[in-house]
Image (cartoon, rainbow, N blue to C red; front, side):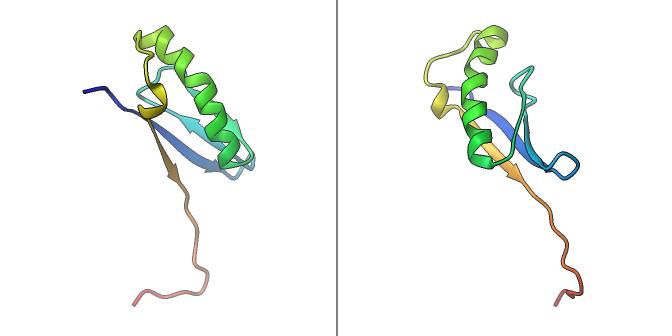
Length: 80
């Protein structure tokens, strides 16, 4: 069984960009204005970081899970 690598994407209001980080892939930090661009950037940098840090490479497209986190507020809404 191959190891999966978790990448977390969070929206940063201060810079108005998506930011991807990973505890599983040392050194992974990248940002983009859209989630699609962020995924492209993660796919571009993650294989090299994994190879440099963890000595694993084959089949990396199947090994990366991207978790997108977003939050919002409901002004004037009440819970039922």
